[in-house]
Length: 428
Image (cartoon, rainbow, N blue to C red; front, top):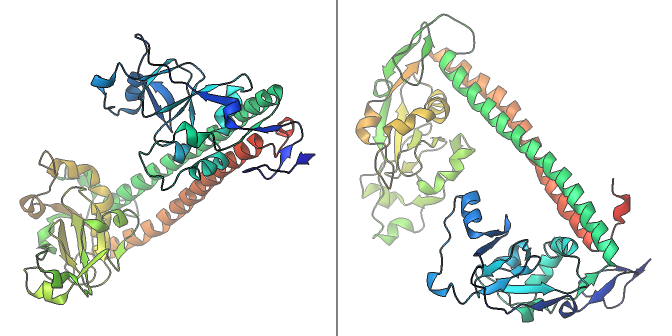
């Protein structure tokens, strides 16, 4: 049975539950920090940790407010902290005593509160959505004050039911989290298998054969009948160029596709580029040293994110951040794309220089040597890898979908339990 009158953000509430003003459940703790208080860091992912533990766990430095160390807020174990990202991920319970910045709001629970239950409620999707309605134009870094927090009435089950809900969620979310972690490990294993397959086939072909010692440091052996050749002997190297940004007309009403660093992210998942994030005009091309390169030109990023590669699906120009290879008749562009994207990836680091922006210089690019199978074998390699990696990619996609569904189930379970929509005693 449920009651449905004046429930605010609840659609219904079990008859044994009460919907109370937040002030009945929490008061604002305003005590100044004590001399021995440790500095606490709240976060969405890790909850509330001592600052040193947070930095050790995440590898991230935290900016310390040295001058304000004596004017911080005291925190008791089981207090809740409204931090600067609470409108994104909810309010955190602290299991530690310590101190936090005055930018945070510290909530002291009343005797009505079983903190194990409220730690789930105050991070549930429904509560977070309601929290966002309490202030206007919430943005990253804006704090939520106690006066905003108390606008939301809170459900208060009987204490024994609060404990039962918390115990159920602890148990069931741990089970779901284990499943998710197992699937993440499977995804990682499939990605490793995919990479190993592509490297092995690219360097050893589609059928066992006798091999010889390779002069390439990134390929120990190659099949007999393959050659090792300078890349410039089978493909023409073109350097990219960026037309002047001072000429606005070269960047307006544009229609010549132009490969730039904006496209690097796309190169993770596509073989061919058919359009690009930016375009330039034919006038901009004509009045600079940039060139429109033919379709099936292979581009390789040589600055910042080094080693990303794709094939031009249509004629395009490219920025100076890319090297472009126009393949001759003895080299299939898709085979070169496989070499760049997989077999040569571990070796690209040895070409990089520069302390801030890593770069493969033109001299190094011109010195590239590659294995060159017969053309028909290059095409067999590409076709075989397309078929086999498609199978692995399908398994990865299915596993990623399972992970997403598990996350959705986890969130739905939390919401249903803390809002009294399910009897936790019936959750298997």
